Length: 460
Image (cartoon, rainbow, N blue to C red; front, top):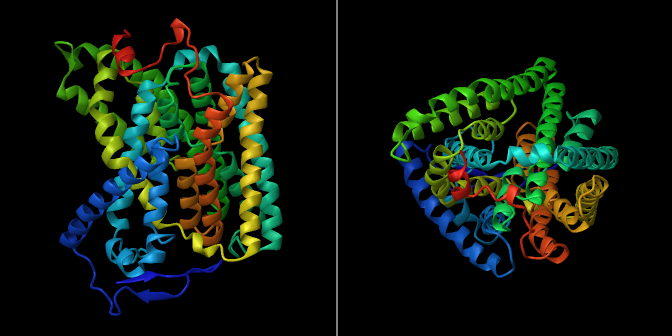
């Protein structure tokens, strides 16, 4: 089997043999053997990087993001290219069955399960009370970085070859604008949990604004893909289907589950049938939103928000979260890392572009969201925390730029620039939060107690 060892701005680069001779097509047994070895390496390496990251105040999720990049061609493949290519056989053309055949669907399952749990824990009551602040922060966090990203895309489009020839100017501006205004919604949830902010005003406003930002960014991506494919029915199906899905889930599925709640619980514990029902609904929601192009994570998150509170929510979280976080979620970071080629940034101009993208991302997101939070009456300390949290890109940034790379909207070099921006803004979140806000948790009113497993379990 062959692996790509280089890439230009417009087309895949030269291809080289892994061991000097072509490898045979992998059968199911080969894939399984490789998968289990990869899984062991990924999990152990993520924990090793996590142990180092904790010394610098970084949560495990940030360590996993960094570990994914290090396992890819940017470090492992640079130091030991033959070993990396043997451990992670990777055909970017997807004409051979290799690591992508199973790593991508497994990573999507991990993402969806995690967002299902985030939806279960989501405090709709606090969002309703802080709706004005969440909307203001969201609007500021969309408009400002979008304008800066679109302007930067126009400059790059005319002055560089970072966008492939088939990408039009309008598509380049929309895509880079959407990439700038996205927030790491799943990662934001994990950082908030790590900081002990789940259920607080600061954490909930950030989550509410992040959800609105990401939904908007995905709608913008739908417009880009529709223009790229010259098929505007895709965008209409994306946006209309998303609105319809949210309405049906919250107005129909949620009341039905509330009526079924007694049948899903036995002797104060969620039954196996109840667990299967929850997982099946999560999968159905992820399937539908993925089908219409809105991505599986949104379907899973909304379905989680529809789950009955109390015992059902408590036991779903308790039975799903540990295995998802420990086993499945690291696979996504590795999948993205295997797509990342930081060595493509081999000129001063590209590193200058990288710096410009980073500055535009931080000013457009962090500063704008801080000012919006202050304008709606939130105290400066909390507003600084919200701006810092909103500036983290992480998971969702990696998802959207992976799509852009796969569809040929951006070049591998621009993909590497955006990965660096996502990694740095996410690495900044925890230490900057501690510097501006402090490591201690925000004082919480009794009515805004954290939605922990125990609190969720006690609620009716």
